[in-house]
Each structure stands twice: as C-alpha cells, then as structure tokens.
Image 1 (spheres, rainbow, N blue to C red):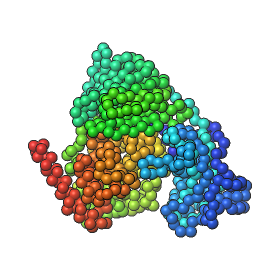
Image 2: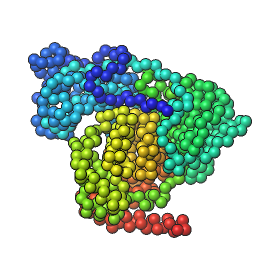
Image 3: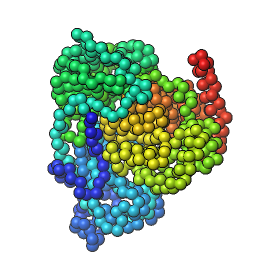
Image 4: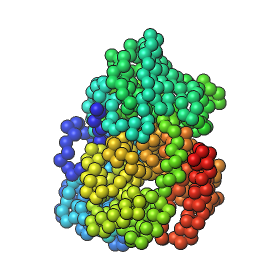
Length: 622
C-alpha cells in the first residue's frame, strides 16, 4: 500500500532534506543592502546589537490587534513544479497572534493568480501565539505549486489578531534539488486503505475473454483490451450509456487479473498496472512514458482543463483525467499534447503524455446511486462552543446531526492544536446530543493543521473519537495544496474509521489543483454531505456553478449543501429553494443566533422537506 508523501510543512531548523540548496532568491534578505521591502513607521529596517548576521534587521511593530498586519517583501522568481525552501530567523517580544510567512503566486506579468475568487498563495511557516518569543529562532518550510502559469512569489510576513513586536533577519528562498522518482511497485502503489463496499460501492463481476477483460462495478462497466491497447467505460448510473474510451500508445501489453474482490480489481502488466476501484477511480500506474488519448462519448456542460488535469461533466455523469506529479521527486510533468477545440459533438479527443513512475487517475462517475432516503432523514445543525442542554434538545426536534466548530478547542484556531478546552462540558454536550438522537461531528481542518503528516492526522482523529465517543467528523477542507492521492488516502481511511457515521466535508477548494471548479468525484463520494461556495461569486440561480460544482447529483452523489455568502440577487429562502430544486439540502447555521433565520428553517424549510419526503415515499409505494 502506497505511502503518501508530505511536501508542505513547517519545522524547526534541523530537518534535513539531504539535498543541495540553490542560491538565495530573496532580494536583500539579510537587510544589509537596499530595496526589496516596503517600509513605513511600523515596518522598517533598523540596526540592532543582537542581529543574527550583520547589524540590520526588519522590525514589525503592531500595537493593536489587526486581521492583517503585513510587510510586503520582494517578488521572488520561481518555477512551477519546483520545490523551494523558505527560511528566516525571528524574535518576538509579546508573541501575540498568529504569524505567517509565505506569499501569493504571480504570473509572468506580475498579476496575482486566483483560485475562484481567492488569491492563490502559500504560507509554509505558521507560528502560534507565544511561539518564537524572547530569543532568536530559525524556522523553515517548503512549498511547491503545480500551476504552470506561476512565475513569482510575492513575499509576505503577516501577523493576524495579535499585538507583537517582531524582529526578522536572514530571509531566504532556495531551490531544493530533489531525488529521482523511484519505480512504482505493483500492485502496492495502486492500493489504498478502506472499503468502498461499506458505502454500497462494489466490484460486482470480473469476466475474462480472449480479447477483453470486463470489470463491472456498481457505477460502471470497464472493458480492457487484453493487449492493453484501450479501455472503454460504460456508465451504469442513472442509466447505461457509453461514457469514454481511453487508448494507450504504446499499448500496455498483456494484462492479467491480480487481486480481485468487492473493493478492488487489479490488472497487471510488465511495466504498467491498473486498479479498478468501485468509487469510480481507475488508478493507472506506469513505469514508462505512455500517451493516453480520451475519446469522449458525451458533450460536457462543465469542462475544465487546468495545467495537466481535465474534467468533463454533463447532466448524467462524466469523467476526469488527473495525473499526479509526485512533487517530492524531480520528475518531468505529464502534459496534454492534444486539447479539444470543439466539444459540441461526441467524439472529441484529448491526449495526455503521461510520464513514467507516476499514477494517473482516470475517473468515471457517478459511482453510486443518489441516497434519497438519507437526503430526507439526515439533517444538520451547525453549532459552536458548548451549547446548553436545552439548546441541544431544541435542535434535535429538527435535526439528527450536530456539527461543533473550532471554538470547542483551546485557541479556536483552524490550524490547531485540537485540544478540547473543557472536557466536562464537551462530555455533557455529547451525552445530551446522543440522548436526543443526534450524531456529534467535531471540527477538523486537514489543510490548515500545522501537522501535515496524514497518518499523524488520522491518529489524532482516531484518538479523539475513542476518547470522547463522537461519531463522524466535519472537515473544513481536505489536503490544501496537495495532490489527489493525499486526500484520497485520507478520506478512505476516515470512512473506514467511522463506519456508517456521517462525514461532512467543506471543499470549496479541491484537489487535484486546489481550485474551485475542478474536483474529484471519487473522493467526494466518501462524504455523506459536501459544502461548497464559500467566498465565491455566484451569479444568481442559473449560474452553472450551482449545478456542476455545488451539486453532487449524478456526479459523486454525495448530498450537496451551499455556503452562498457571495450569491447575487437572492435571499436565504431563495437559496434554500434553489438547493432543493437541485436535489441538494441545507445546513442550519448556528441555531439561536438569528431568530428570523431560525423561523425560516423551523417554519418553512423543514416542513417543505417533510412534504418532499412524504411525496417521495408515496412514489416508492411506502
């Protein structure tokens, strides 16, 4: 089973990459020269006796807490898919607030890159309140971007929500020489933990003939030419139809069935192998360069090509091609050498040059039927802090799932540490909720958490669940900036951990490209509910973003919810109706904080959902 590498991290100095570092790319990083840094009365270069090198340092003096107190550094030239080490020395006086070091990515013209409405950036160094106080300490982090249009990093040092005087010296960004990627090991590198069958997604049949091997899953039928020249995907949900054909050049060679059970079927050749997963992922691993040409049988309503990733969706389903880059190694990128000019008719093609020693995700979807009964029965209330017993019992009259946000933790920070600030109160809330028939889903943010090692994150969550007796989890995002294998490993492991308890995932930003319009249905499908749309401009009820990004219907068939904080031209009631029309649902945000909103939910939304459920059950003959 494959080990998931961790690239984006912050460590105290002493972590050894064992690789050669390039020259410092930061202009005036030791503050002994001229230029590079924006200065004013509160952010300036000064002379001090204890400067780590030379005699000058940068001082940042923040006398009142601000959301964004920052100093702008130079624009540092960088290259995409290249690993860099960011390091600096810091001394803090008061240690108030969160200190972040990184910046925003820019293109060759100096324009900031975007992911939806949000700036694309990286902040690999994050200091918690109090960290780095009194003495000079050195910190380092590493960053990388897949975006092929990235040409520079606009360096920033940011203090958030705190009072502090900060001294900075010896800022450096250096290229890291990475090792060559090792060969993939088959089948281990194409297997992941967890069992899709716990969610009703199964390998139903494997049939071998002289000219083909056919693997039938809950959602698709995948037919492989025995010589490895092609595979054809036929969709089975919501109806049977041709979806896409993938041709391989040169052919993969003879394929034989290796492991085969209800959770995976592995087809193996000499230098290539594939694992067919019933969640819709066909993981193709290759130790030699191969061209993959997709011939589409659908006309996509939602089509996104970004860098080396392609997503195509119509009203009934779709497919995707997401090559990993193995960014921890020095490898050539996979690239699209042919892109479709016209997608208005079936038969359009796209060709990916897939480099050796990597995995390509060939996704077909939806992988499972839409969970109609669950969509009516499971209803979510978002709370915070530790609600009173009375409040919990009131929420339980309408909802059977309670999300508890980060204010249950010391510091209430999305980046951790995730330490419950009052064990007795937490135990009371959980016990009362369980007595009232509610599941309890605590907050966790895999992408923001300062610990990036996926297995350590899973251990933290497993220990939390065992200690406190909670049920599922609410995830405020997945692996931030990571490639799809990280989040795939994480979510499959979580589903194995919680069984049939609820997983609710907020993924406005998504793998494989950390953006808003491209996502992985084979990852989304492991969550019972998805939340998208935060901070994104949605242009009214007819915006295709609602149907093809927010809604999971006939895509992942996870139940969609909307955070429409920037949706134009509609009020909250209209938003709720739009989601019902899209076969999505709503989460009740912070009951008790807004009486008018509470009445909208208790007197209109929940009764409307009850009426829809009654109509659906009548149609089912119940």
